[in-house]
Length: 109
Image 1 (cartoon, helix red, strand yellow):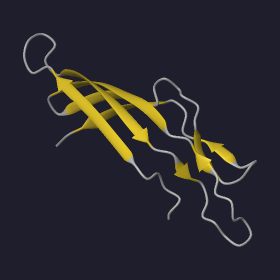
Image 2 (cartoon, one colour; image 1 turned 120 degrees about the vertical axis):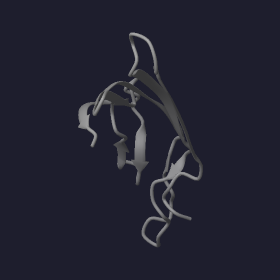
Image 3 (cartoon, one colour; image 1 turned 60 degrees about the horizontal axis):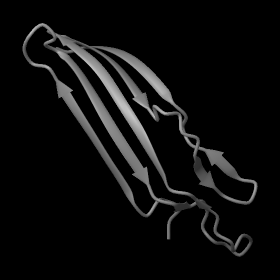
Image 4 (cartoon, one colour; image 1 turned 90 degrees about the vertical axis):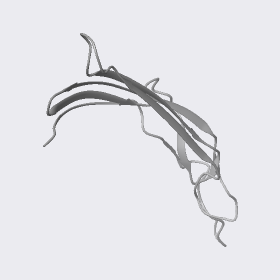
């Protein structure tokens, strides 16, 4: 038994417009599921197992491609869901990653 979720699933779909005045514009949406997971392994000192509940998180992306360049804004946990990332004891629960927005400019060669 490891301190990892037993089940994980994710799906991300992305669409980029290829023709017309908005050619190069695109967007994506994703969903991630993590089943409940043990936060610790039983030991002689801590025989009890503390479990973090299951959670579902949503992600998104907007991007625009030009010849040789890509501008993108990516968001993880876009609804800013508060969830227990790991619980190791009665007073040892830690929050998972909150909403994160990252903008990038990429040059392709």
